[in-house]
Length: 77
Image (cartoon, rainbow, N blue to C red; front, side):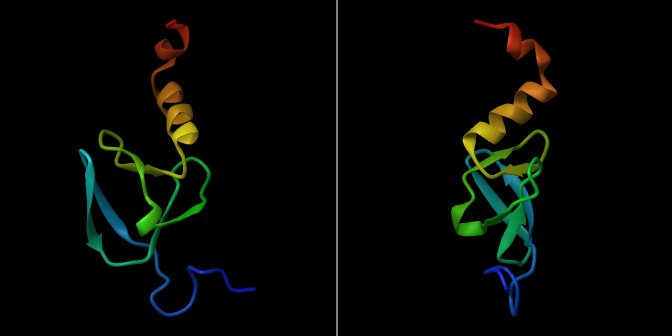
């Protein structure tokens, strides 16, 4: 079965992640979540880290990665 990212034009994009925006440096239709490996269509990309230059499939996955990178966040509260 072909997924929506396969076929003509279904290649992975290269992205430069900026504050509140991103810049496509190599054309494609999707990126892969840095944590889960799931494909994220560029028009659905909402979560990323500027510091790590990584995309995430959801807010919860983004938070998970932030806690992994900064264990002190777990102790706050």
